[in-house]
Length: 186
Ligand SMILES: C[S@@+](CC[C@H](N)C(=O)[O-])C[C@H]1O[C@@H](n2cnc3c(N)ncnc32)[C@H](O)[C@@H]1O
Image (cartoon, rainbow, N blue to C red):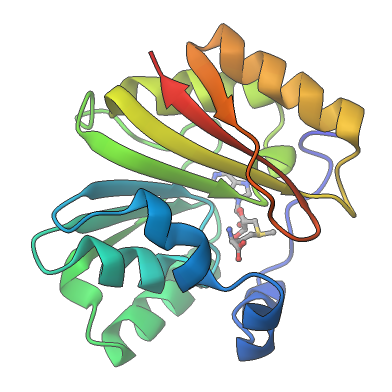
């Protein structure tokens, strides 16, 4: 399953549709994990359905590093961050094939969000192995995969890859139409 499909850039517009809040409200979903001043990492943000809320919750002293593989997703995210007055808190970066480019972030990230993205990577193992060093010890990763695209056994295999990279499974939050796990870097 992993890496079979990277969602086309124009789906980015669909994913930021306000109606999606009825299904997964970013404020309600993220508030339990965020505090002002946090450093946040979001691989695969698309055009930023969750990113803007991450930046609001991290506050003026926080920052969000959002890394996407598609230039049009990054451009859309920057545009939306600017309109929302959040551009200074959001560092929107372009990933390279095979690397999120996280060098220099080692042990700096308090919270990471990987929502509907890991199944688009060629392999979940290198994804978790790249994200883990960026998190502080004790830092959290909220990991969710759409249940319409990712089966339960596939999600469990991704969790096994996360465990191999040094993540502990803390809880399985209920997120509608998604498999989800809160992982903790040990
Ligand atoms: C289904 S979209 C989800 C977007 C966002 N997380 C959301 O839930 O609205 C998956 C995103 O992951 C990005 N992506 C896929 N492979 C990637 C990679 N290797 N590195 C960074 N981003 C990637 C895609 O370009 C796309 O923006």
